Amino acid sequence: MSIVKTKKPPLRTLAEKKINELEKYAIDSNIARKMGATLFQSSLYRHLSKKLREFRDYKLKEEVLQHPVPKHVAIIMDGNRRFAQNLALSPEVGHIFGKEKLEDVLEWCFELKIEVLTVYAFSTENFSRSTKEIQTLMTLCKEELDKAKNDSRIHKNNVRIRILGHLETLPRDIQQSAQEIMDLTKDYTKYSFNIALAYGGREEILHAIQRIANDVKENRLTIQDISESTMSSYLYTNGLPDPDLILRTSGEERISNFLLWQLAYSELYFSDVYWPALQKRDFLKAIQTYQNRRRRFGT
Image (cartoon, rainbow, N blue to C red; front, side, top):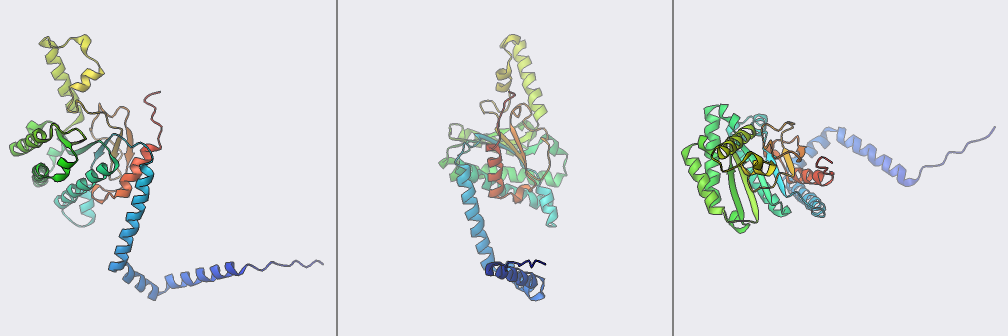
């Protein structure tokens, strides 16, 4: 009969096993749960968590900057109302949080040197929402347009602001504010910030076709002149490059009548995060995912 000798586990393995048992006991105990709850609610924990997130964001940003970033990012800012609902708040409060998030994202674009940012702020379909919600959205739009006139970031970073959409359907005071900020920044060339207001992709295409047809009728254009570039020049986005990346928040995976002509070869990225809850890390991951894709352009 042979005797099989078992090899003693190393002291380090025994120690790790003991630590794991103690950790499990601590987690299962009421004392540990109470201590953990106190820690998570402490200002020290919040401070350390914030610093750790900032460090991770910094490292991820450094990785992203090692590769070419998209020139034009377009965003469908979705989830304001559901974000508010989860916090037992009114939809109007959700839109206020969403407006503040847009300011953050604009800063992130400056950091990454993303030259063109286009956001879907208010669609033609949004006019079917409640009067109260529409009024809140219109008020926020006007406040932001007026605020942009004196925003040092806009002037320091040489940002041209354009409002894309059927502006004639908007309240007159918003039309005026929109025109003023466009006139004020029309000569800026470093960055472009485009806000789609009263915008619909199908309507944009129809409007372009109507204008082309009228120019053909008036002999300013021939049928042979009509090409893809001609069509693009009649769109609201005339002079802008097509989006490289379209990001939609909130987990919905559809385009919702946004930039239908321009997105032909755009990369699409859908995030589960509601727009007001979008963090810098979420945005950086979207950019990094874009960088890891191979753009084929139909080839």
